[in-house]
Length: 272
Image 1 (cartoon, rainbow, N blue to C red):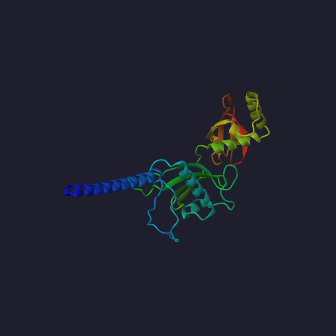
Image 2: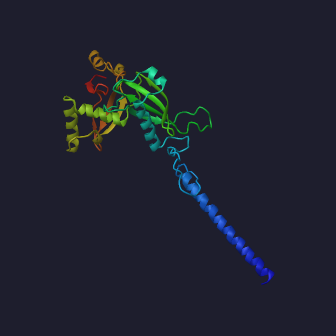
Image 3: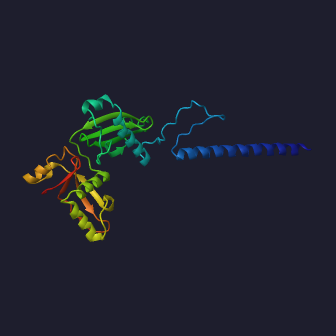
C-alpha cells in the first residue's frame, strides 16, 4: 500500500468521524430547540435508574414576561381561590376577616368569583423574579369584597392578598349569565324574556348560553326618582349589573331598565 493510499484512508476515517460528530451535534441542538419551543423545563440526567427521592418537577410555567397563557390564568385562579381554605397572609386577615361560611361565587358556590388574571408589573426592569407570578382579581359574594391576590405559579403559593369594599370592576360573562338566571326566575320579568325569545326564534329559552350578552356594573347613584333609588340603594356595596341582551342573528331584548343585584339574587325595574 502506498503512502498516498494510507493518507486517503486516514482522511476518510477522519471525515466519517467528523460527519457523525456533526450529526450528533445537530440532533442534540434540534432536541433542545424542541424543548424550548414547547415552553417546558428539561432536566438533563445521566443514564441509569431514576432516583427514588427525586423532587417533583416545578409547574410548567413559561419563563416569559408577556401575557399569561390560558393555562397559566386557569392555574393562577385555582391557586387564588383555594387560598381561602387555609390561613392567608396577615395583611389579608387584618383588612377583612373571612366569614365562617367561606368565600362564595356568583352562583352561590364555594370559592370567590374569578374576574381577571394578569401579569403583575415588574418591580425591576429586566428581572425574571416576576416571571412566575400572576395577579388575580376575585369577588367574594359572601362579604361583597373585591380581592386581589398575587400568586406564584411555581410554588403554588399566595404571595400577597388585599381586600376592598365598594369597588365594582366590569362583570364577567359568567356573572352576566347568572344575571339572566335571576331574571328568568323572577315571576314578573322571566315570562317576558322567554316570550321575546320564543317570538323571534320559535324556540324555548332554557339557558343563558342561548343569548349574546354584554354587561356593565351598576351603581345606585345612576337611578332616577325616589322609588328607583330605593330599589337599588345598595348597588355599589352589592354587586349589581345591567344587561344588554341580543338573540343570536336577531334583535335585542330590551333589558335597559332592569338592574340585577347578584349579591341579593333579585332584579328591579327602575327609571334611568
